[in-house]
Length: 285
Image 1 (cartoon, rainbow, N blue to C red):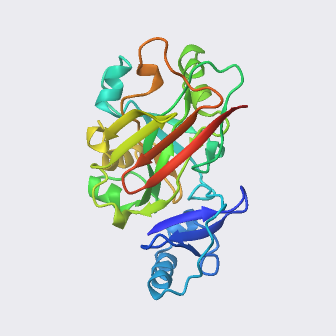
Image 2: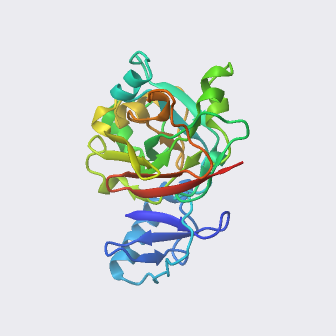
Image 3: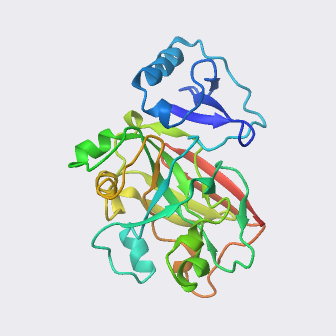
């Protein structure tokens, strides 16, 4: 299923995109797309049954904002330097273990919402990423099979980053990763049963119409299952938590000088095979 949330920020309603591309209203079936729903097998079965019966009312998508596909996210865990080509372009050694950092849940916005260039920013960068959404509470998982059984679904994430804040201002990466609007998510949460091969998905990103990133999850250093298993050794993952699994080569930081960092007025578009497309216009904060 392709689950999503539509409407004004803070007042989104649950919806479903059916096989014919029609937007369907789920608000009469469930209250929201969130961790509580994703952990509730019976509720998900009700959605599937309602979708198959054709009883869900259609929504007029014209002018309707698409919000993040998951509400009330507890935490966003991120994996850095997780593609061989991206590590190489930044001059970093291949990590022996996954590089883990966090984004606050309040960085998450809709897939087409405005992204704000932070005040005093000179190195705002783009990163298309596969997001994993957790569907079952995960602690100390022992195998790849067990890890994948805890995944509710997948989505497109844009891990926007400010490289000067991240790298040149001391401390951890947090300052460059947690600026307002720095994690567009969506448009859909595609349930795991519809993503047969998470390690064989193409990822692309364009800036002002120019293709900048063109990669595949097959190039991940630590595959999805290993990432989920590994993270569960250090923290409890709850339904509705999100893991951003890293970006392929092609970020501004890896380009020759002068590096083409983002500015107000730029337009970024990104997509992952089968998971949908995002488009953001940048403005000054």
